[in-house]
Amino acid sequence: MDEQRLDGNAAAGTLGEVFSFEVTTAEYTCGGCANTGRLGGTMIYEVRELGTIVRCPSCDNALIRLAHNRGRYVVDPRGTRYLTTG
Image (tube, rainbow, N blue to C red; front, side, top):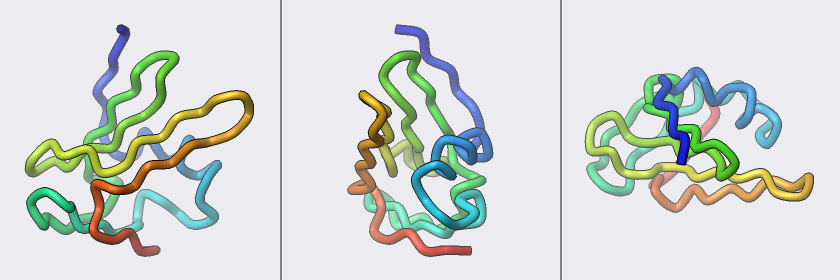
């Protein structure tokens, strides 16, 4: 598996195709440690051919998992308590 670690701003393009707001300024609360921050400050792991994982910089919890398959996006935000526009 070819994995690349980036900062949260790297997911702007991919998440921007799914959400209609500026995702880097969206605020989240981690479901694992209750850390609150902006998505631009998270850690992004892009796994080639599998998708993108947005992780909490405090506890490494997977906040959002995003996959692109057959022209459709699958978004799993269950690692967040909430996500709100910035």
